[in-house]
Length: 455
Image (cartoon, rainbow, N blue to C red; front, side):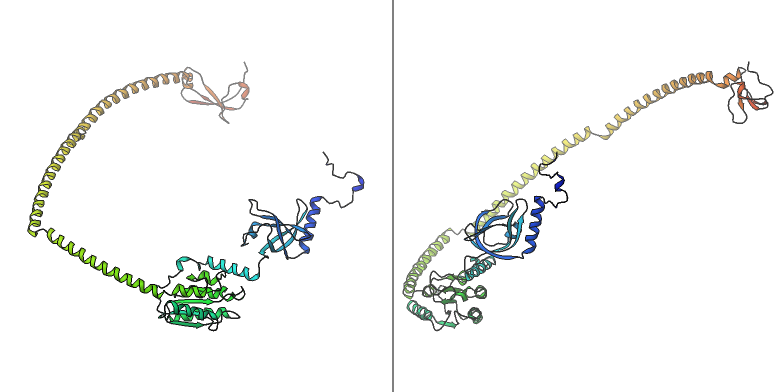
């Protein structure tokens, strides 16, 4: 049956008529060949994630929208999963979905366009270092209870040093402090901070280090968000307390450090014990130690008296041991006799069972059975030989009855052609002058035909 859309008139002949499939295919080729990879920014809407793993959504701005597809092999590389309403920056190529004739873009790369560059760098470095294990708790070091010397890595001209020193003097005057001066912002500050951390680690003159700085914007604190500083903190064998910015400020150094303090003053309180409470604590521990020692001495004296009264005589222990030895020897002899009786009984039982299966008895049985079978075999062979002899005689008689030699003995003869030894049954098979052979009961004759008669 002809399709209703198939042109049939002569007027359509010679025209280049497109099918819908051909049109979409050529438009797709033109689109894909005319545009290189482009960067496009817009808001995500109508996001769909089917089971195939591909992403389908609409990218729009205030005045227009376009259909988008991001296939599974590409969206696996996207770190942050997209959501409806998210502003993104994509690198894509122009295409056309031939099955529906829809213009679309195929996305190769996607990144978040809503946050600032610094915030994106912060999150990327944070995820990288977290995956590398720099934030793991098993790498965190404990702070010393009473440090012999405290190191401060900060700017020597800021108010941070004054606040930390005031707090340390108030809490515990006798702890010496070493200041490691570094710039805390600006070009090259991160590299200088990392170098100072490594220098403090090599000198190894402090029990704990304070990495401190006052508050500021994200740009001001950016030196503490560099990977070189994070690596230096992680590699440092001395415990480090991070006290960068105010309580709401969070830096990469805070995640890597062994402990974070909300402010530099709080960091000074964290690493220094309170001297008044320490004195009270020492006095209390002294009293507890004295009481504990007295109790231990009394307990040990009582235990010594009890042990002295319970200590048995060595002679009594020897007599008890000898008596126990005699008892064990008697029990051993009884056990050996019982074991021997049991084995003798078992051997007798096995011997009786062995007699039942003696080879001599079985040989006698086999011998009798062999004799009986021999007699049966001899009788059977004689019977079969007699029967076969009778059959042979009968067959010989039957063979002699139909034998051509018997016919010849009654005066008949067999005539054959000399040429091919063919048996001649009629006179018409020979002609005058042919040589023939005649087989008699005894001997043969060679004759020549002189005359033939058909009657």
